[in-house]
Image 1 (cartoon, helix red, strand yellow):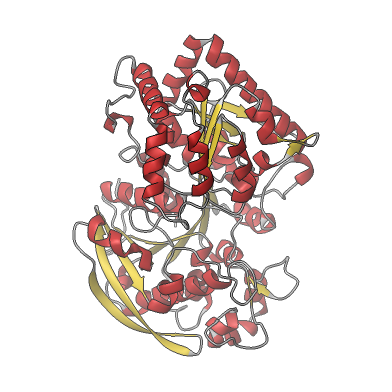
Image 2 (cartoon, one colour):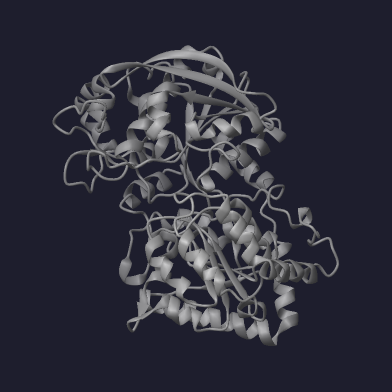
Length: 556
């Protein structure tokens, strides 16, 4: 069903990422797949993202045509006037505009996210100013460009777009122009809020580290409006700070999360005693939005064109009789050729992209496929950060969790990078485990396909896509019963679920779940095969998600 708005264009997606051009996490998958699904239903959708230098090699490969220069703007930001070049590309069926500026998105800032901490002011020092600049460019386009003026719904994604929403709703330069525009704000991860000081007392040359440094005239305007300041300030900072996530929640016309259960969790406060992560200090704002009928929970879909076992050689899948035997062939072949595969990945990478390459090369010398072949293979593809792997780095009675896990008769392979990488490195001392401190799409996709169990012990999970990808290959997820994981995995049906009413019970229940998995894998093969079949037949359609977003748009 197409969105019935009598204008040239319906939806503008504003995001830091989109799959196939700039991808770090699930945000990129959502923006790409949702846009594509909406377009297939007859809705006009365009996307705008920054033009990161790291995208250069992908631009000539990804779209139906090469990027063409669409517009050049002069943008007043900080104490300078900056040139922003807007390019356009068709990414599959999606019109994508990309905002290029060498200072904010090139050189040291050429990656999607950066935290140089160059002025020792902590996380978001760099990214907050970069996305504030991006937001300013988008506001200018919406106010001056004939094509962009036709959009009537702006769909903003995560904290990166908070300054755009603030500009459109409260900046006198734009406010009257956009009285008819409606804004949907999607929360992908409430843990990242982009908080920065309103002012640092002085302007750092080239730093643009506070809100006053970015938008000095708008800052003076806001200081006179105590009501707006109360909506955009961070309520838990020692000094006056601007919170783009809180700003977006308070000022958007509607807000949604990426799963129904996560929506119910974030209106409650965090409660470490009961092992619960909720609103991350924004629960009061979210409760208000919910009470006003402006908060929604829409489960993400999965891109089955990208993650399909039917494209493997040999193929397997729910339409193929006896597919589990073919999946097992892939596992055996992988384990038998594992040393050569990893060696090839190491040869193609550098020290920066494969942080523990030397220790892995030494470990490969003692690799034996028999340490893995006769056991359930647990796999994990993840960012190695507190949200995702904190449980694995903790202890029970002073014994490391990883030791308790790897004493069991399982194999374990983990790939990913992040702030807890050094702690996870300890698993490489065990014969039945590997941790790869890198990111290789080839290895990640292979692990999804060959694993028996996908390990996902997240402390919170707005939606999660990894468990969906794993199920598409018949790999059974082992998940914590929170957020989108609770919405997608049913215990002993298409995966395994654990939970704890406090931290210690959660750790114990994770261990017990692993013991249960080993027992079923070894003793109840028919039940195991049935669960695998249930998993591979569980489908999370972007068409269904798109229909729910269309209902939200219509409500606006």
